[in-house]
Image 1 (cartoon, rainbow, N blue to C red):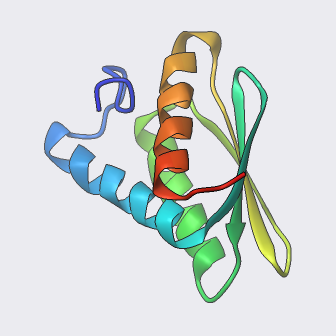
Image 2 (image 1 turned 30 degrees about the vertical axis):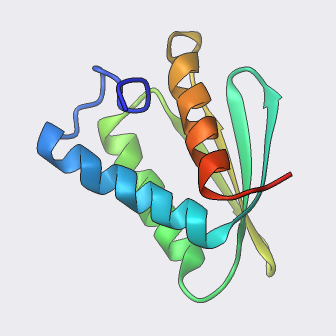
Image 3 (image 1 turned 120 degrees about the vertical axis):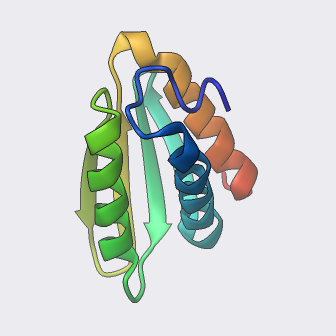
Length: 109
């Protein structure tokens, strides 16, 4: 978990496992596709449905508050919620770990 939750994260240590579990639940329940268009960007497609967009927006807002190195772009459409996640070069390993975690939670192409 050390590369997934970097030292620069300001979320209290006791809350970090809860946030990781929340991300895992989102990936397990909704992730349909992931791609790495470049080394500093991860693109996820999440199945839409009741409340999914709101959950994604709430989660990325809270994550932006404690890990300011992330840039999230949420692009909803009727079928999917697209989530692009970008980082700066210093946090590429965090994005790598997030991609591995997402792939492990859902067997996606």
